[in-house]
Every structure is written in structure tokens, then in C-alpha cells.
Length: 275
Image 1 (cartoon, helix red, strand yellow):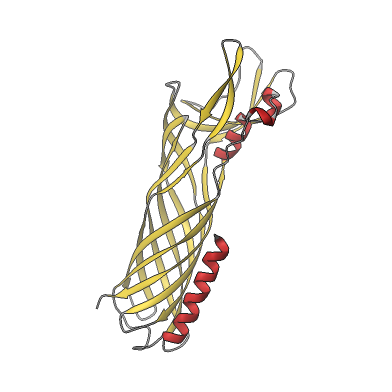
Image 2 (image 1 turned 135 degrees about the vertical axis):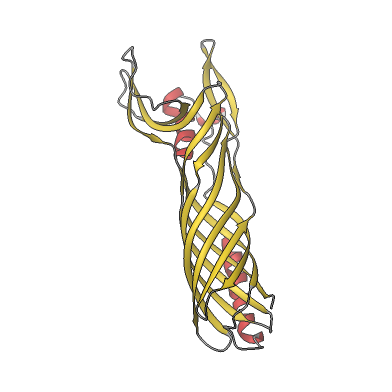
């Protein structure tokens, strides 16, 4: 998939060099860009938690009995529409809106119920609703028909984590840095290729879980009496767990759980000049 996307980008860029014609690039005009591509994210706490739930060391279940470790894939497709307004000959302001990003998986894990191990089908799901980015760009002309745009700014990523939770982020913010090559094809049409680096650790999730507990989604490590193993856990509660009154459970590294959308994206698309 990634090799095919890279070859497609190369083909379109070479086509842009061959077909480029029209007026000199750099004219001050409002533009609309439609682009798609592929992104990558770290995921972080969510995958660590699901891996712990399915760890064979906990239940001593062989792989041939179907104990699968759910891992949300780090890659995802993207589709964005961006409007750019010129501020000066070398500066522009861009506002981009993306389609929702949905990451889900299906796995079998096990839980003790009525004194015996019972298989449970788990469908971890994370949805980023209508991501929004605001970027300030600096335009650097390379020739009459080509220019490089370098920019960045804040992003808003409204995120929901579901199964077994139902929580929404109350701090859905991130930052991105963007580098873009634009090739003029006609008077009102350009080909663009873009790379983006993101720092977006989405946190402060609030809501409830399937047990009915309400509060904040916390991440922590847990160890049980008589064991030397620390497990990654996340749970919903009013406050971070600190101690067990019975002295059988120990906690450390408590903090608000993070869905880490930090990573990179590669996109290609078309830019239309409206005026």
C-alpha cells in the first residue's frame, strides 16, 4: 500500500513537471486544496492496555486457543480539504478540515467469571471526529511554476475511545509542521505534494465504562501481591488509583491516559485558484 502510494506520488510529480504551464506561480489568490494520503500514529496507552489484557502470562492460555492480542494499527488513510487566504506575497493562512479517522480492531481476551475463564470478544475503537488544522505558510518560489510552502500551527482532534469505554477527550489539541511542493499545471490548477509531522497527545478523556463507573480515563501500572510483574492498565474513575486498603494491589506511574496521534503523514492533491 505504501509503495503504491509512493509510486503514485512520484508519477504525479513527474507529470507535473512535464505538463506545467500557465501564469507565474505566486499570485495572491484564495485557493481550495483537496488532498488524500496516508498517516501514521504511535497509539500508545490504548495498545499497551489491550496487550496486557490478552497477555498469556496472566491466564496461561496457549495461542492455539484463540488468545489474540488486539493492536490498533498505526496507519490510517486521510482526506483533507483546505482553504488558503493570502496575507502577503510570501505568507498565507490555511484552514483545513478532515474526514473522521476511525481505528478499530477485534480480538478475544479472557476474564474470570463465576470461578472460570470465559472468552470475551473485545472491539477496541477510537474515532477522531472532523479534525481541524490552522496553518501559517511561508511561500518560497523555486521557479516560474514551482514553489515550496513551509508552515505549521495548531490542530484540534475531537476524539472518542469506545469498547469497553465511552469517553471523550477534553483536551484534543496538537501541533503540526508542514512542508509542501506546489507545481502549477494551468492558470487555476496546481499539483501539491505534502509531508506533515504531528505532535498530538490527546488526553483528559472523561465519560464512563461498561461497569457504569464515571470520571476520567487514567493510565497506570499495577502489580499484585506475590508478583514481580507490572501491567499497563487504564480505567475510568474520579481519581487516579493510589493504594489498595487490603494491601494486595500496588500502583505506580499514574497519569491521565493518552491517545498518541503523534506521527507523520504523506499526502498528494490538487489546488484550485478561485480568483
